[in-house]
Length: 205
Image (cartoon, rainbow, N blue to C red; front, top):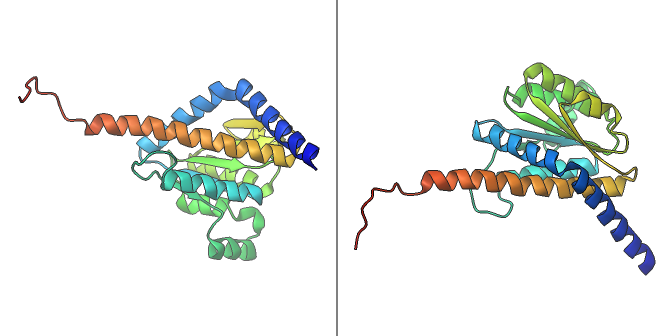
């Protein structure tokens, strides 16, 4: 058991390091894009199924509340949390529409939709991406393996180089935390510069 534990940790670390080495520049670009969306008054929408649903609400909570800094709340919504909305849409329209219907209701041009899927083939996320495009919302996918159909459907896809669901999910949440930290830093610097007292050229003594 101990050897297996060490093996799982080593595999997880190896996948994360490979992803970081290959994708760090693109992740930084996404963080800047997220900060721009929030700065302009837009919001970030997250969705996923199963463990990815947990990631969606985890990351939305980090943005709305705080990650590492005390700062203004940031506009983020997990489309996985309202059971009345999810079950009514699932019952009346079908499970494939549980996210797309919410994007139609809540999404606005200038927002950003992040679809999280280990396989990249979840039909409700593919439908959500299609609706987001119609609304004028930029789309991002966090996925794994080959990227699935989702990778080709979004504006930007971040594909974890693994076919194992646990390793993909572990990398997704580390990626999400990196984005939270970078966005928070970017917006906190801008907020601090706005709040700094203006220099008058005079000093009191």
